[in-house]
Length: 65
Ligand code: SF4
Image 1: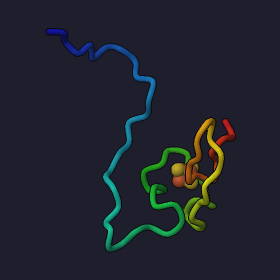
Image 2 (image 1 turned 120 degrees about the vertical axis):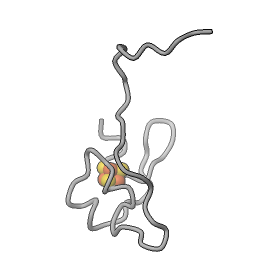
Image 3 (image 1 turned 135 degrees about the vertical axis):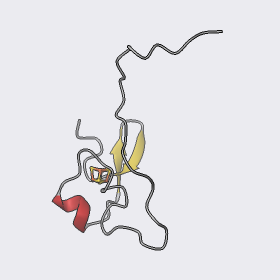
Image 4 (image 1 turned 30 degrees about the vertical axis):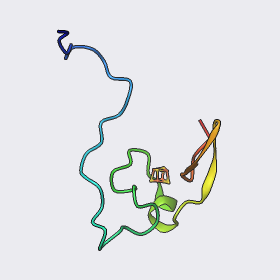
């Protein structure tokens, strides 16, 4: 059985908090309270689908990196 190496660096971000309350979804992008790159537009406007590589994502900045 293998062991988890806690000293290895992660290549993904760890998110704080939890999913929004379905009875009180945040304005704009519902993910903005937890998103590490949220901007003012994320708090004001829900994002539409945008191309993201071979797929699409509902993010104001999808496909920009
Ligand atoms: S629109 Fe994109 S950048 Fe903005 S909060 Fe949502 S996931 Fe994050």
